[in-house]
Length: 124
Image 1 (tube, rainbow, N blue to C red):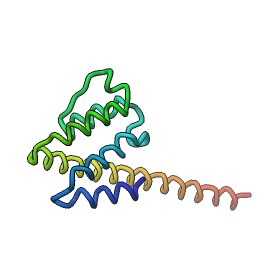
Image 2 (cartoon, rainbow, N blue to C red):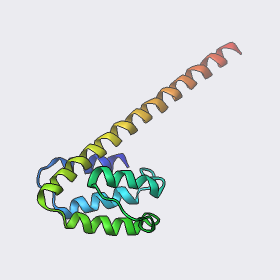
Image 3 (cartoon, rainbow, N blue to C red):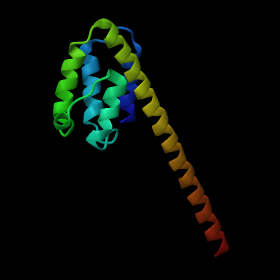
């Protein structure tokens, strides 16, 4: 997933991102259950990035969320679109940094456990 996120970050960095690309990136993020394990998690994302809120019956279905969000992105004017692009880029950057920190801590824990296993072997 991180390679996809790196690709999304590089696409979002350019100034003139086509709407279909932003809609595609948004679709991939919303449908990804590792980023958003529960549909309730998507609510804060939509509010922060696009300033969108939907009714509860829409939040219960990812496909409905996706359909409404796609329509709202498509109807954005250029100023709103640019603001949303920047916020989405910030979100992707933040998620990549967070996943890198988590991966680093997992690696550190694995290194420590290997070191402890070596001590146990030396005592025997």
